[in-house]
Image (cartoon, rainbow, N blue to C red; front, side, top):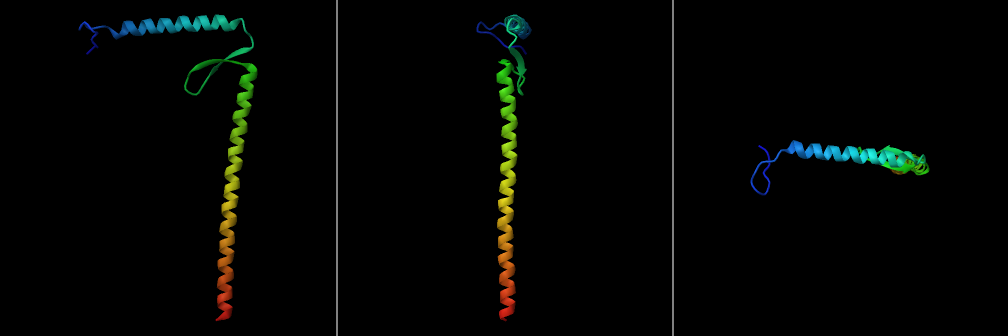
Length: 106
């Protein structure tokens, strides 16, 4: 069933889609013309599929920054793991010392 407009008559959804597609095509053409005169800009697609125009320097900076953040996260997790292991080893050593001391007393 097709949606009704305010007057109660049925509209075709296909006509609305074709107009939107034509509008998007014209918009993409105009963007391409505008940025073709500017060689410093590059077309970048994000993970959601959105297209953005960025300066090359900005793109390189963000790409390097993204790598840096991932590296820091990896380092933090390994540091936390080492801290947890050292605490567990200290507790284990204290338990062993207590058991050995208790056996020598009795």
